[in-house]
Structure formats: structure tokens, C-alpha cells
Image 1 (cartoon, rainbow, N blue to C red):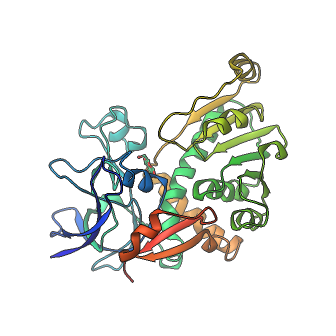
Image 2: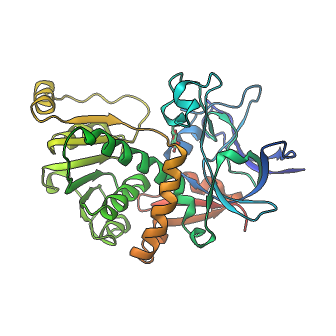
Image 3: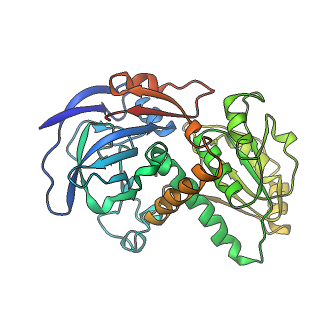
Length: 345
Ligand code: BGC
């Protein structure tokens, strides 16, 4: 049996195209699943630009898509696919289920690196690479994967801050894309006063998404105030990283979650940065990917949000395209938050 899929030729620009792929039969420990929908993020656009991505060993093309919502054939269980698989060497982190902290760097990622992704009608997947989702969360569960990125960054921040008695009150989020907004929601849920900075004008859909959970939106970082106990950088725009670090409170922590390819030279007062970090015990750390526990936390938090803020989480999905129209999903407009491809019903 074969099915339709979105395939890319890693390294070539604008290569994404619909094609047929073999589905295969599930072997031991595997299940057959149908893809309901797939979220599109900056990484997918980067892969389509030929700047990132790697085909599976022996293959020329890679099936795109890593933010999934699947239905398992037979049981009918809804599930989200875990993006990363452990390295073959099974480094100590991969061996203990922390593939997000892989030491060798030899990990694989569905739809990104060495493993086909989820932008296809059907697939065979390892049962232990799935996170179950209750049916009630079907409308929002495609957000589990991007939220897992946020859950990891937040969990890391809290783990780091176990170094002191920490009662965070003020949070800064730079960027009101999906990761930034999900971070804002997660930090509001944890009771913080949250300030989100983005370039969109006040009253725009991103600003409204911020207001919907009682967070503050500003279109200039200079309007956000200072003394933030925690900051989450979600743009990958390097100048904002330094701006955000300058707004940290004493003992504050800044999590970097975004990347931008290419180069960007900025001039910083390195002495001031060093002095602030030393004299105020500050931490800046990077965070990528997520382990199973972060996906499970994402499922739990989405369940809380849909009750706490009716309609708000659903409205983060601002555009839907059928599989045949996947290209429209790869090029989003500045007011779009999460764009999804509706693969199957
Ligand atoms: C994905 C992560 C992945 C990272 C780097 C992100 O878009 O959400 O799961 O680890 O890209 O490839």
C-alpha cells in the first residue's frame, strides 16, 4: 500500500512536493497510524529552503513534518509522535530517555533528520515513540509538540533555579510566534505576570492571543519594564537575546529556544554583560527538543488551558490547508500563529 506525502530533497531550495510513499506493514513493536493533521513551523520552512534537514540513510528524500496528531489504526487512540529517537550508541542520556540531551549528537528526528516525518496520510511507527492524547483534546493536540519544547525549557529553568530559594513573579517572552505564545500561556498558568514582546501592532491577532490569558503585550522591548525573574527568548533574533538578558532581575534566568540560520553580527558591551551575569548570579541557557515527560506535561497543560481560558488555545491555530495545498502552509503571513495541514479526517 502507498499513500501521499510531502517530500523534500534536503539541501535543495523549494524542493517540497507531493509524492507517493510506501506505507509498509507494522512489525513487532510498531503500529499503523493515520495522520489527522500536522503543524508547520520555522524548521519546516528552513528545510524547504534547503538550509537544514537530512534524508534517511540510503534515501534521497525526506518526508517533511514533525508536529503531528495521529490516530492509531485498530485501537482508535489519538497520539502525538515524539520527534527525536535515541542515538544508536545509546549515550547515557539517550539510554535514560533524555534523547533531548543526546551527548553524541547522533540522534535522529522525524521529518527533520534521518527519519521520515508525519506529512503523509499513513505511516508505520514505533509504539514507544507515541504519546497518547485524550479525544477531548483533538482540536488542540497538534500543539503538543511545540508546547513540549516550551515545557522542557520551563522545566530546565526551574531545575536550574533549584540553586536558590526562587519565587518567580515576572516573566518576559520575546516573540509571539507559536513557541512564544505557548510559553506565555504556560507561564500564566504558573501564576506569573507575563510580558510578551513582538513587532505586530497592538490589537493584532498575536496581541489578542496574549491578552486572552491576561498577559501583557508590547510592541517594543523598551516598554516591557525590567527585573524579570525568567525570560524565554523565542525568536532566534540575536539582538533580542542581549536585550532580554539586560532586563533580567537579580538571580534571573533566560532560556533561549529559537534559532536563525545564517549570520548576524551585533555589537554588545561584553564587560557589562559579564558583570551583570556575575554580580547578579544570572544564567542564560539554550534548550532544544523534548523528552517524553515534556510531551506528557504538554498534554496535561493543554487540558488545563481549554478549561481555564475557553477558546483561547483553539484560536492559536489560525490557518488550515489541505494536504494538496501544503505549500501555502509553508509560507505564512505575519498575523498567522500556528498553521496546520489537514491531512485526513
Ligand atoms: C523541533 C525540535 C527539534 C529542533 C531541531 C524543532 O523545530 O521542534 O523537536 O529538536 O527543531 O531539529
